[in-house]
Figure 1 (cartoon, protein in one colour):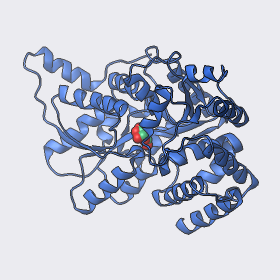
Figure 2: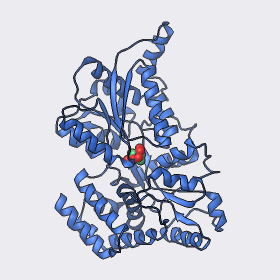
Figure 3: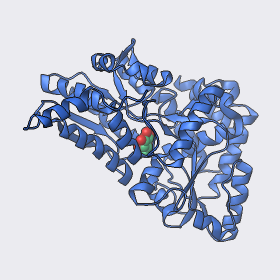
Figure 4: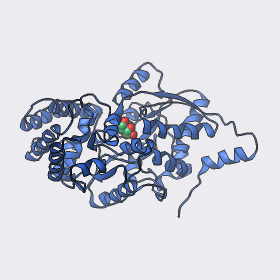
Length: 417
Ligand code: GAL
């Protein structure tokens, strides 16, 4: 049975119904990295909802897709003894900070609102430390997507999306022959790693992905399959334009939007850019999973650092409740390009890409082909992830052989573990 209302909107509605809006206290300073068009629109939904419920929102955006700059800023703030009230943080990073005793829990809100009953178990587990919620999930992003401009594809006589890497390569060769840039890409480590992990899934499958990128098995890291994945990544290096280095991810999305390139391989936050620009899914852009038949999970969440002051603590509780309210989960994810973290939010207002994401999430959960994104800090520690990003980016920007890349990756990971 679908439950629209939870505690938070009822309180807000009651406040409004009594005349003067309930000037409930609650202040949060929020550190996040959502600064692109689509991201800013989505986080604006959270800010507006929080202020509408009487809260005071202090915005602390740290530009830089993928969040590495934000995480550096966070560490500096904590070392200075001045942590933000709430931080965009996810995956093992939540556990790392919780183990340092830096996080406040929102277990009271979670228990009162029954979060366990409306979150996928894999997600609920990521949000908890010692069985208590220390984070609230805002969404489920999918990383393994190919975005395309159908009009550009048609110019090269391509009318279907590739379902294998061989088909992708064949389409890219046709696009090159037609004088069109096949792959819009931003040459930044996290973006190189995003393509890399999707290639690993497609070349080796979910079990191999887990062995290599989650369990860090040296056999898998130095296997012929990993060499084949680097071979495919090498081919894709030949499909990007000359000015890819350092490009922000959303400018690569704009290249597809404006017809300057055919494809972008990026998580569905790219869809947030298309939508923010008024583009229509299925008409101005199309989506298709990258080869592999899996689902690369990247869930955004906010954690709550231990801070003093009743007003800050009230703000944390209010923000946690708001994030998990069904209404916010709908409005935020419609803008962000992701799907709700809550399992009880109807998707009838969502587009076909979102509905496919949801359907494939269920299928991947059933088939055990759901994998956590390494590139987006869902799979391994930041230090080991850093070795992956460094090696993959060096490979992408050099003539390193696939065999050397696999061996050097295994050696680097071993050193960092
Ligand atoms: C991811 C984050 C997404 C999106 C992307 C680009 O790590 O989970 O929400 O913001 O970075 O910045």
